[in-house]
Length: 337
Ligand SMILES: Cc1cc2nc3c(=O)[nH]c(=O)nc-3n(C[C@H](O)[C@H](O)[C@H](O)COP(=O)(O)O)c2cc1C
Image (cartoon, rainbow, N blue to C red; front, side, top):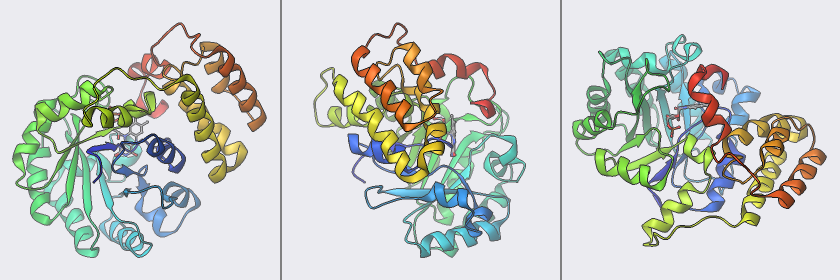
């Protein structure tokens, strides 16, 4: 793996266009698709095909699947392998009711036998690496990650990603690095990938130092600062000077991301999908608040072009340096993000 810094899956965001545009900035190792319901994959539903769309530049890539029925997980995993995908990530971390209600996501962490059966069935069905993404456990009284990680290692998983929160925490409270460290200590050989609240180069380095994890997965931090992997790459190469992307590179990023989206999703859908990003990356891209607001509502490619022209002229005229999403997110239920 070229880099130890990975892109954590963010449903609704980490589709091909975003993965590709971030890869082009440099420094990103493994990326993972948004979570895909195994059953929908087997039926090749349009949504699932969009989620797993990829190209030669989008490597290394793992496809994240979930579901409460082992046969469906197996069928989806085999199909992905046949199609040439190189890795499968099983989601055991999602806290959302619609996912756990299916017996998938974090619900699997409550039942070691059941979870082991699911993992084992998929590993036996395919030759490509199978990884697991999970939380520390269901709640504070049930911290199951270290025990599960050990069990999954015996079954042959290639790596484990731990989001250092419990299901009960949702996205609240602090990430518990100690819990990740215990999981690192619980396994013998396989890499553990630490995840949660990494927003800066210093956070990523602290995650590795404190937990001993082999790699770090970054989700929202990459939405807020798409250059985070590039920054880490610079530091790894011995350059610890303060660096910011030039204004024109920031605007190019915005345009390139939208253009890549248009290629895959067409105009109407791209406008809808792109709007969500502005609240996350508007601050980092130096977009004045009123123009960020317009980016959250624009309805056509032409309007996008017009807004970008204004951003070019007024780049940096932003008053609040905090991302709008960060200000709003912690108070709202994750379903509404
Ligand atoms: C909007 C959103 C969507 C997410 N979608 C997924 C997903 O599809 N699969 C998954 O394993 N985790 C998902 N997560 C969890 C993230 O991958 C990650 O574990 C979590 O956000 C903590 O890391 P971060 O602080 O770097 O974002 C999602 C999180 C958010 C905020």
